[in-house]
Image (tube, rainbow, N blue to C red; front, side, top):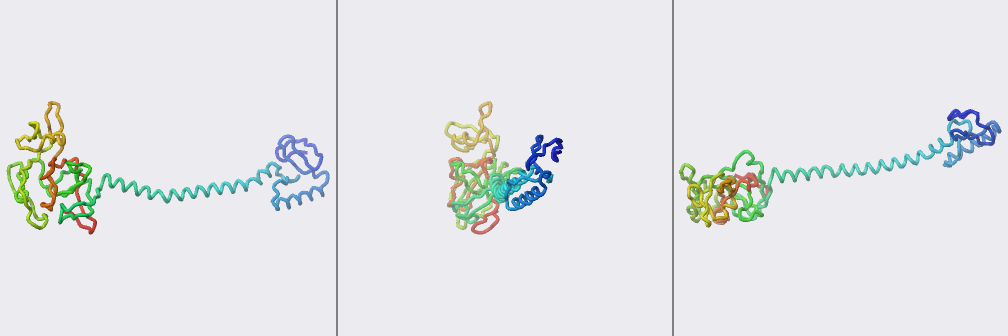
Length: 305
């Protein structure tokens, strides 16, 4: 007999079962008793339909016993594959759910770190422009390609304690001199011209107090010290000896030069504002400015100016 699976010729036909010595395929020996073989085939089919996966194939079937065994195991493998696919689907659903949230958090952090600054104002020093408890948004990009201007409302690290963030209005610019008379600020510019600043945004009520003059050194200006006070190139006193540590670089020749442009800032509520008039470190350095306050959004939305 010739094997129908591997083609091996010379299989001995003995017994009810014939086994190919070359590939191991098994067949019913139909030459001994065709009726018995047919009966066994019918029984095997019924057993197979009843779920008996151990029944072997039959002689005239082209399938071998090993092939049938593989076929009976296939549904089990298919179910396992479906379970794995289902698990992967749940994982995918979780990723699809979390991914937008993760992206939103990252975008929010990037915006907060590089685009916007958001604070709650703890005092009333900027009344009536900004009240105590107001929430404001500042643009960190406002001074990327430009310098602060007079009357800008800025957020900055408090010069005397940089763990705190203050909000004030810019009054004096680099190279100018600020003098306060009866609470009103006067500016003397680089050309020696003196004029009063805009007072329209100041809190209702008459501001009081005389302060100054305060000269605001420019970036790169040389500073000298007598060990107690520091002086600008024009001879005006700009602060105590700590001014050098706070605002200056030391050149190769040992001179102290102002490292950043400096600004003189005041609150709109002049009589109740801790500002440049009173700080130990009088000026706000440009690299300590967080941004320009653009609007407040609580308790009501309002553009700041």
